[in-house]
Every structure is written in C-alpha cells, then in structure tokens.
Length: 161
Length: 204
View (cartoon, rainbow over the protein chains, first blue to last red):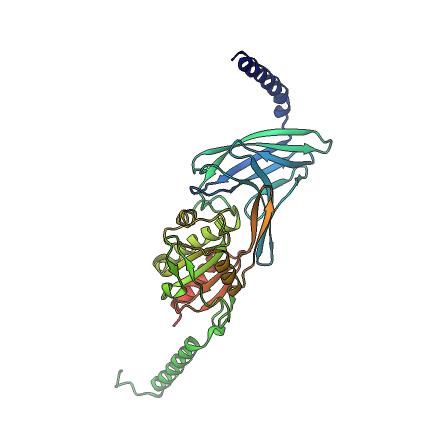
C-alpha cells in the first residue's frame, strides 16, 4: 500500500512537472488542428478512421498519433490505383509552413484498429498528436475529436443540403 | 380528328408528326448506344452474370431475388474507414435523389473480408446507411469465385499487427432484368449515379 502511494505520488509529480514544461510550448503552438472528427462504428466493428485539418506555422511533420481508445493507431494514406483502393501506413505527413493539410476521405487519415468497444456517434475521442520540426524537436497536441455518424459525407454538409 | 379541316397544311402536319413519332419510337427501341450514361456502359458483358452469396440471415441469394429493381453492387469490408463508408453513403444519397423511385433500387455490399466481417457486423454496418441495403458474404472459396466472376481484385495487406485489404472500388449496376449494364467509378458523384439509375429504371 505504501509503495503504491509513493509510486502514485511520484507519478503525479512527474505529470505536474511535464505539464508545467509543456504549457509554454502549447502557448506558442506551431501546429493548429481543426475540424477533427472520428467516424462512428457499429457494434463489433474493429476499426475506423479519424480526419482533421492540420496547419503548421513552420515546416513540420506529423509523425504519430495515439489514443487511449486503442493501442493500435497509425497514420494511413489512401490511394486509388485505377479502380483499386490501396491504403498504406505512412511514417509521417509533411506539413509545409502555412499550408493546410487535410486528413480526409480520399487521402490521409488516422487509422484506429483492434477497437474493443463501439465508437458511438455524439461521443468524443481523445488523441495525442506528435509533430516534429526541422530541428528534430517534437511537440505534442492533445485534441478531443467528436464522433460523427458512420454515414457522414466527406465534406461537412453545407446549408441547403 | 377534325374532319372539317382538310387543307394540305393539316395533312402535312399529320405526316410530319407521324414521322416524328416513328423516329421517337425508333430511338426508344435502339440499344444502349443511343442512351449515354455517366458510368462505363458494359452492356452485354460476359462477366458479373450472377452470384450465390449469403445474406446476414444465412439465406443464399442470387440476382434473381432482386428482379424489377436496379441493383448496385459494391465490394468492400467494414474495417475500411474511407472508401467503403463513402461508397455506401453515396448509395444512400442516390436512393434519396431518386425519390419514390428509390423503392426500386437495391444496394448490395459484398464483403471481401470473410475472416473479420461476421454476419452481425455486416448487417449492422449496411443498416447504418439504409435499412434496405443488404450485405452479402461467402467463405474464402466462394468469395474467390465471386471476385473472379466480377473481375474484382482483393488482397490482404499487413499493417501493424492487423491488416487492410486493397480492393476494386467500382460499383456495378444491373438493370431491372438482372443484366449487368454499367461500371461506375468511385470518383463519380451521387448525382451522376442517380441519373444512370433513373435511366435504367425507366428503360423499356
């Protein structure tokens, strides 16, 4: 019991320090994340995708994503070769300074696999996104992505749809 | 007919309108070449003639089950986060665009992932897009036969400790007589699909 309490206290201290150190970096965030969403699943469905828009102030790379939802989170690129769809994991996605890079159906997405539970419309999924600058320094951005219906269209519905 | 008007003008008009009618009838009777589709016209194709696959209740289905409807067939899998939901969402939009004609559309989703796509998951998946959409599946051998008949490629590709499946992403369209007519591309829109389905529904 004592050991547990001590370990928990140590963990809390480390987290506090880490957060304190992280906060200044977030205050001058290099990468902005917009319109993030996750496609809902039906029960027993084991995988789904997350989409969003990224924009970096300085030349950077999107290098990884993680989520408490599942240990298996990868960044994928979908490419049509003729009439055949191919999806491949990519090690990183280039974010040229000032350019909006979209993770959207037909292109990149965050792939979540080995899901243990249904991802329900109306919920949110936390992600930690890791970006790397040209100097090799990495920054983390935490987001909460809303879960949208499985049958959501690629683009958000415009007025009059 | 107005018998009191017996001038040359009215007779000419009668002859002209008769000729117009005849031409119109000819156009209607002609083969698919005079009707232009957004999809690729593959009328007369010697492939994709039929399938024998199970629906989520375990019942075996063939094309004949859907006679008098236009049938759209798409091959995919439920762990596909991009192309498959997009294709099924588009099919749902096609049904909406058709209005009352939507009742004469049958959308079929054939699984290329027999290892992971159970009947329960398949049923819930298609229902999320439209309750009338029907998932079909077969064991590995039946799937291989079906894919060959439909000229559809599918291939497992490992990723991480799981796998994805590369697969042909066209939609095949059958007319109300169960004949394969069109190959529609994933890059085409619901509006383009719906226009083609309407033409197939209203053909002679």
